[in-house]
Amino acid sequence: MAMAFPPERRSTGIDLKKTLKSSFDEDGALKVKVLAAGALTNSLPSGKVIVEAESLNVKGVIDSLIVQYGSRMAQELMNQGRLRDGLVLLVNGRNVLSLPEGFETPLQEGDEVLITIMVAGG
Image 1 (tube, helix red, strand yellow):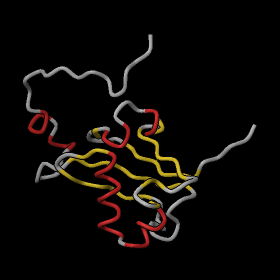
Image 2 (tube, helix red, strand yellow):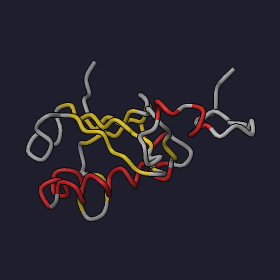
Image 3 (cartoon, one colour):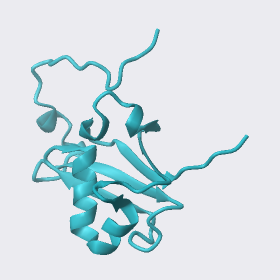
Image 4 (cartoon, rainbow, N blue to C red):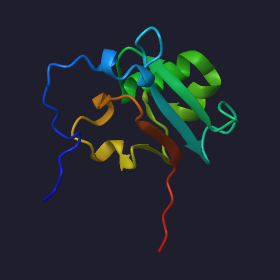
């Protein structure tokens, strides 16, 4: 049985921000880990950063990175408003282009976004 992405979530009526306080910082922002492997070597030399916001989708993470790191990040990541050729963006291990909502895919606390170079071979 194939699982849809993201898995369907039913409301339990519980305020998760209050229940899972350890998952959220004091102002209620969720945190998404962004990792870069073989990509963004000039603009993100550490290869990782945590992006925080009250709500995020994949496009919002990209926008946040460009705002935070400036034109160098924009040049390494984007080309004419699209993800630069040769880069792959994975959300929790799945290519964003294969997700039903693509770059509009909503992210949740603890999600991981990996930006890497496309590798082919056999």
